[in-house]
Image (cartoon, rainbow, N blue to C red; front, side, top):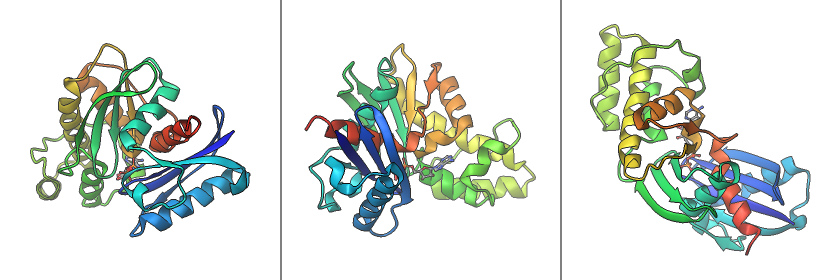
Length: 253
Ligand code: ADP
């Protein structure tokens, strides 16, 4: 049975095609101004990458904030449930999932079948999200994929949680001669602190699974581990975990 999961997030649209437990293909695209178009296009790209025809796909589940705009779904499911199921696929023994996406961050507690037991979500402010990172590093003239290549450095003190104030703090630090790598480390530390405060009430003994686009940053993963005094593991391609979870849920509807 071939199923598809489509996750239309605030920043990126993701799609995964699954046959039993094998990922046949996947795609990631910017959501842009039209979640409907992004969902349709990312689905078509994933179908192409899987080398199958759309007619072979038996069930399609949508998730993410843009799921309501997709008119070709068999079912729409919340991203919390999909992230829990997608994370469970790789790390069934980990109970807690931290997901950091473009405009929100979540902490999810799941059971041994991948079902959600509890969750906390910050979607009220950009602190601790991909948007915070993107805006602040842009003022350093850096791109996201350059961050892990910077030399190791002592984190600079970033006091503002608010993106706009943090951006002015970054500009002042830069003007005062602080090295870019220290500022980046400071920004990542501020995200790690913010998210681990949210996660601390749910943290169990097992390792934590870290998902979402921001989980691609290695330094942040290490900082989260230090803040939470826990092992933090990142699945392959952490940005598509919600779409993977949707494709897994589609196998049982
Ligand atoms: P959403 O579902 O809300 O659209 P995603 O989970 O798709 O969010 O993640 C999108 C975010 O991932 C973007 O805001 C971007 O900041 C972040 N991101 C993308 N690539 C990287 C990277 N290499 N390192 C850190 N963050 C990244």
